[in-house]
Length: 92
Image (cartoon, rainbow, N blue to C red):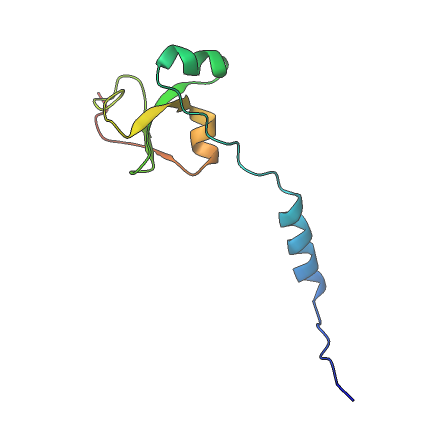
């Protein structure tokens, strides 16, 4: 006869699992080559310059805005939802 162990899960653990399973996934990033394209994609949001390897974004007016080969224009909300943070470098 084979004995199968039972799995006991507490009520708080069940609630945490249920909560996390119902949360929506982050908005996918939609990178654009040109600023005008990004602005048309998100008319109610600010367009930022996303530096992919550094996982930061730059605002218009910052020194590194629209510079670099490994970056693109995206909506600020999408960048924040995907874990990118605002760069403090180059603020005027």
